[in-house]
Picture 1 (cartoon, rainbow, N blue to C red):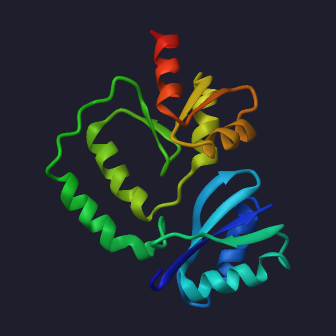
Picture 2: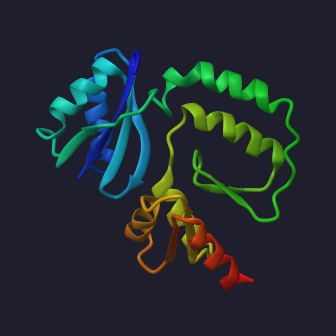
Length: 184
């Protein structure tokens, strides 16, 4: 895992997770990486800081802190070299205007401007994923159906954020084919 790590804080909201990250930092990078839902937030940063956060999380009010088996400390300032590479790679890509607004996880707001979308893709490499806010804002904007491809992780999170949303999780080619027939 190198010098960075990530951990899921269960039973912690964004405010508590930020307090834990701040308390664990000790001059190193330790920040909120993913605001997943009202009771699950992921932190990211230097391995030593994340280890400290895991140790102190329960005493600070989280139910559990679980280290994540990831290859890098995603969505934090330690990812700046990757953000720089992303910016360079995207400078060669033509980004067209989307047919519908894209809700960028880095802002949780709808966007249609291609240059802004390109910049937000770069910002997302080091920026916090505002998943909870993104889903809530999409639902408030009239998005009532969500489709998850390849797993059953995000669907339950969407339901915790927007209980009235319809969520479909597609985990096999048969699921995809069935949905394609349903919407055709």
